[in-house]
Length: 195
Length: 113
Image 1 (cartoon, helix red, strand yellow):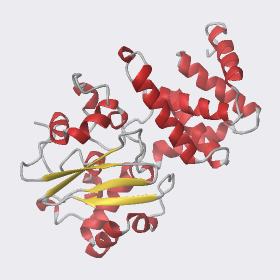
Image 2: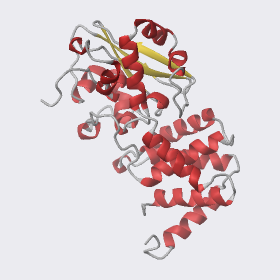
Image 3: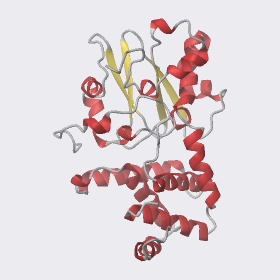
Image 4: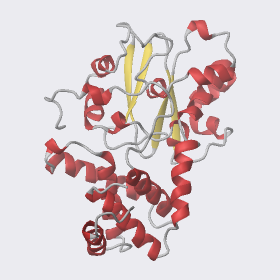
């Protein structure tokens, strides 16, 4: 247990809410494990892999993201409108929420720490190439970079480019290779990042 | 507009884990505050838009007023926003929360063991 003031204040709030009958302790535990185990970027990875394998699905996904992910039945929503932006040879997309931390939870889980950081929020809009470079991703000079600012109403997900040499892989093998960061748009897939 | 324009970018913090499935809450209380927010929203005590606006203004206030050397802690702002909204809605009064927190701050060491 944390002994920090905010930690104790959270504990105090929890006890007050329980006393008032507004929340039950096991609901809290269940919600935490839901987000730890079932809501995460593996959901988005399945969507991306399906789009790569099925051109019809990809078309629907780009036209109506919200509708196209419905068939997966993901839980843990907060997505009114999902817009999927497709990377191509000429365009690279990056997602941010400049005001707070809007993020497509149902398909990517909760945002990573750096996504919520003031530095990322303010800088990626102004100098996306430089920020990506600092995160280990160098974009080809001839690519146009588009930055999408999320809001409570619209959440974005990037549909990354599939590396050419992945074309023989099955949908489930592909899903395992799609990283969270590629769906936020701060990583290109298929590059050796260990170097 | 933003406070970090002239600052060194905290590179080590930005280097994200490359694999899927990282630990999402760094301390247990963060997960509990998050879960309470989800549950109270589901119970209809406030709309998600209301919470979102409260969070945005809490973060803006921090950007404007806080001692920046303390470092930015997202879930502290998240927790501030929840408390503030619950106060405004008359669900948990600010004084009530401070009082209970003080009790916990002052309780004998070793309470958890």
